[in-house]
Image (cartoon, rainbow, N blue to C red; front, side, top):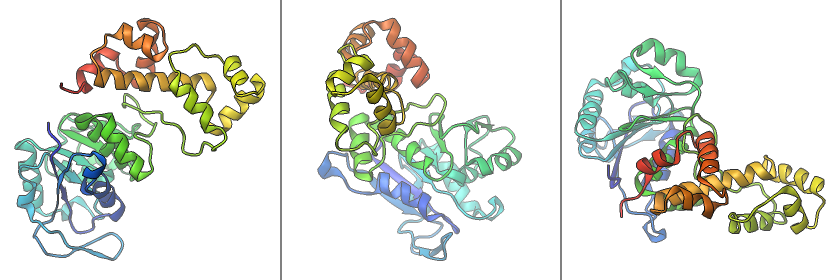
Length: 319
């Protein structure tokens, strides 16, 4: 799938944060920063007809439902109101776009719109935990995963509550455009490239935003020397601290232990190498500091949820 065009489907009762997430990730021109330009359209039941939002304001889409057809992605934010109120013509247009090849991305309870369009039958999906029981009741053939931030089921990506839409959207960017582009967008949004919090979700572990300026150089040095052997004692000596003080400060600064953070960063670096190079797994393991493929496979599967070879097949960038 390409990611050249994204159409947002908005209906009466659209929730502004979820709609804003879609606009922020896909609708802002960041070509000057190296992000490929995306043809972004806001589509409603009728072009120029105002729609109610969930907060008492109005939204006026520039395009009608015909703007969905041919889009690489149709993004569907949440809508306040019962599925019975969804316009039939909007559901028909969403289904037609999906059948024509569009990937459908839903944010929070936007998944109910996809369900009403018949797109959830036999498909894995998720939604906000508050709506999970209702999703199961309304769409009993859907396979609802309640414990994840988002589900990537190929041409259907569904996300849990509100901010999880950021994770799902950035995941889609990563899947189609790679890590470098995702990192540019995330940095501009001041969010991690992907938030931790799911099973079998391709999770990044970036340097925590709350890390102090005084401690950040320690993390920078580790990142620049991941291939070297590290222990708490060697890292503490370099920081001119006792091992006990260093370990305590590290947890305070990052929320995790030194060696878990190093392992996470090695896996993250391995992911990028699997995406962007053709080095074999043994060489990747050496470059990221695991030393051998067996150790890389163990930590990679534990953290990412799949084997390195499976990850490469899915995410490697075409040369």
